[in-house]
Length: 85
Image (cartoon, rainbow, N blue to C red):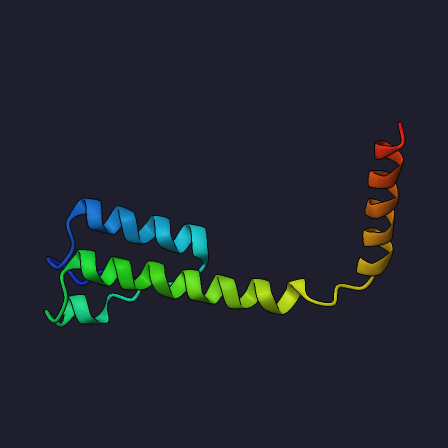
């Protein structure tokens, strides 16, 4: 992410760099840079966007994983065995 000189404090730059390092996405700072949002508002928008993106991605990849039926059967067998011991 390129920082516009004079727009970001060192703390804000550090937060943006951490966000990018952890998410692999640039934070959504256009409205902050245009003066339409505070840094806090833009950061919260970035966090909400990533939460939504992550949830969508997890939902997409977690359903119908090949082998789920066998794993469920094995888990149920293990629970049954534990109850009978």
